[in-house]
Image (tube, rainbow, N blue to C red; front, side, top):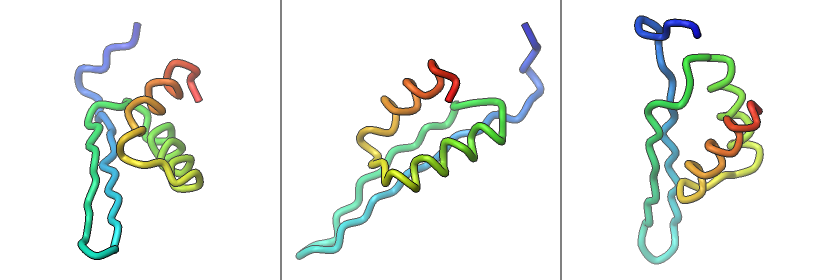
Length: 69
C-alpha cells in the first residue's frame, strides 16, 4: 500500500442557503475525503450537477468512494 503520510488530503465544504422569510443556512464539512485532487474535483462537479444538499453529502461520498466513482 502506498504511503500517504506526506500527501495533501482533500475535502469539501457544502453550504446551502434558502432565502424565504428568514435566511436558512445548512452546511456540511467533509475534511478527509481523498488524497487525489482529480477525484475530489470530480466529486465536486457531480455534487454541483445534481444539487446535492449538505444533509446527504456524507452518505453520497461514502457510496461514491466505495464504488470508486
